[in-house]
Image (cartoon, rainbow, N blue to C red; front, side, top):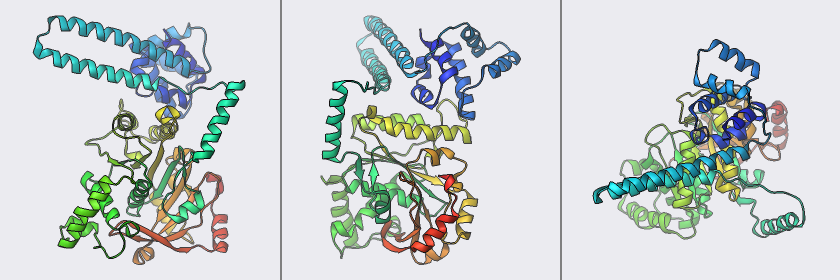
Length: 474
C-alpha cells in the first residue's frame, strides 16, 4: 500500500533516520520482493556514499543491467506520483499494516492447525504462536515514535511539568565517571551520552571500560557489558577482582586479590574466604549496587542483533542504564550482509548514537560507552609528540565516532609510564568543546584499579599542546 511511496520519498528525502527506523525490519515493510530488492540497492548506495543515488545514476545502472527485481520495481516507481518529506510516518503506517495482516494470518493458520492436531502437537503450536506474537510485539514497539506539537496551552503546561521534574530530580545528570579528572572536566555523564575511549592495543582501553562500568554499578546503575575481545568467565573474574580491592567499601587490611593469583588458584585460605564469603556475596546481593549483565556472543553478532538483545534484557530482566561495548567496530554492521568495510561500519556507528537517544521510546535514553582502536600511526605520533598527546586523526577511518560521540577521551601509556604504573588520560572532544589537559593517573594492572591523580600537565604546557592540536578535527 505504502511501499512505492516510501521508496519514491526515500529517493528525494532519505537520510540516516529513515534507514535507522527501517533497519532490520525491511522485510516487514517491503513485503513485495521487487520493492525489497530496490530498497537494498538504495541502502547499499547510501552506506557507501552517505547520500541517496541520483536518478541519472539509477537510469545508467539499470540500463546496463539485465532484468532484475530491483529494475522491475524502479520501472514502476518512475510512474508513481507523490512523495512525503517526512518519511517516518508512512514507514510506521506500512509496518503496522504488515503487523496486522501477519497477526490475522497467523491466528487463522493456528486455528486451522489446532482442529486436526493431537494433544502432543498442541504444545508445539502454542510455542510457535507465542514466538510469532513476541516478534510482532517487538515490531510494534519499534513502530511507536515520540511526537509533540509545540503549540497551545497544553504544550506549555507539558513543558513546565517536565522542566520542574528535571529540576527536582536532576534527571539530565545520570552519574559520575568515577575518575576525578574526567568528572571535573566533563561534569559527569548525562542522558544519552555516547562516550568513546580511544587507545592503542594493550594500552588500557578494556580495563578503563570495565572500571567505568564498575563505577556505574556502585552508583546503582544497571549495566550490560559486552566483551567482544575477551572470555566471558574472565570478565566476571575481572569485575570481582575490582570489587575485592574496593578499600572504600570493605576497608583496608583485607587480602589483596589479583587476576594473576585468581587465575592460577594461588589464593591463600584467608583470601579465598574473603572472596567467596564477602566479595561475591556483596557484589551479587547488595541493594545499593546496580546489576551487571555480561553478554558475550558465541559467534559473530550484528549490530541489530545486539540492539534486540539489549531491548530484551530491558523488558524482561532489568531496566538498562548503560551499555558498555568492548568494542563496537567488532560488530557486523548488518545481519543480512557479511560486508565489513569503512562505509558500512561508519553507518553502523551513526546508528549506535541514535539507538541510545531513542532507547525505551525516548523515555529513558541509554548511555553507551565504547572502546575505539587507535591507528598504529596515531599511536606512533602520540609517542613522538611532546606531552604524548593524541589527535582525533588517530581514528580517521571512522569519522562517525568523532562526529557522533558526545565525549571522546584517550588512554595512553609510554614505556616510562608503564614503569611507573601510570597511564595518561586526555580529552579529545567534549560537549563544551574544551580539551582536557593530559593527566597521568595511577593504574594497578593486577587489580584493575585506577587511583588518584598523579600529575596534570601545567597550564603553560597545556596551552602549548592545545595550540599544536588541530581543533578543526573536533
